[in-house]
Length: 377
Image 1 (cartoon, rainbow, N blue to C red):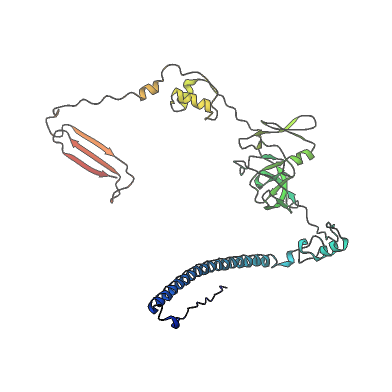
Image 2: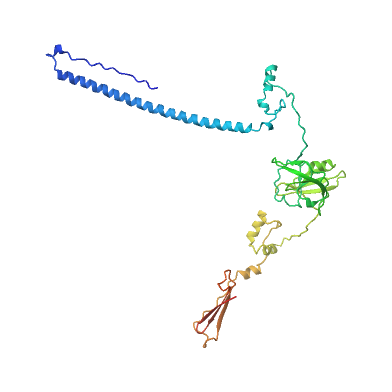
């Protein structure tokens, strides 16, 4: 509220008794000057009040905007709460065991706190709900080729041997199916059955679960230990041995830091340290480039060799030699038409003509320079 103040101005009346002593015109001029001063003061006061009023108007507008934003936030919070409590049948209190609310809003816990006088109250009357035990698979798998059927990985977070391909299993029993497998990201997959691994060059693993939607083939470390097998991991790989210290399974550490099962199939190969041979195999690369490839280990299978190429490569020497151009003839060597013809056949072209022709035949007479152009299929 802006309080308006009333100002009272007192104007002295002319003294008619002393009219003979003072001039009335001068008295009126003095009173006029006084009125002008008062008027100027009133204008300044009005200006300051208008500025103060504008400031209060801006403050009120800001407060109103703040109130509107708070109302929107409150409305959103009410919507979230109503959405959360829309289906109260799914809510269960872990303190009193009743349905329809959660422990945070349980009235019984407040009464127990009030009666006991303590801030910590144990759970009383909690109702237990029995569920079928789920098989856990807490794995952070980052292998490059996880979806290949022939590759199996050792996994310490996997509770059972698992695969998603039924083609690699024999004696698949559907009766052993049922239940679910919980993955590391919270997703679940159904267990379709249980069988024995039967792949060429792979060991025979029993009790392998067939899981729907599983893209990797996993070997459980805990299941191997349950079979009285010892698993030893090293920087280069892992080894599974029995009670007689005989190696049963072996794995190698891959480039993506996963331990991959090494199959029984082997691929033997031989390498050579001949620099001239590697120079030809790598597209006749120059000596400095070959040394850089060896130093950076940029080519898989390239051995650690040193030295330089011996001699000069015959292929490089022939490929870098320029061809001599035909000598220019200042005169015509022919004396009659059709004595010498220059012919050229071009094609096939990617875009055929309207008649479906893809070749162009050009014939030039050396004497007359007459040219024939024919299109061929």
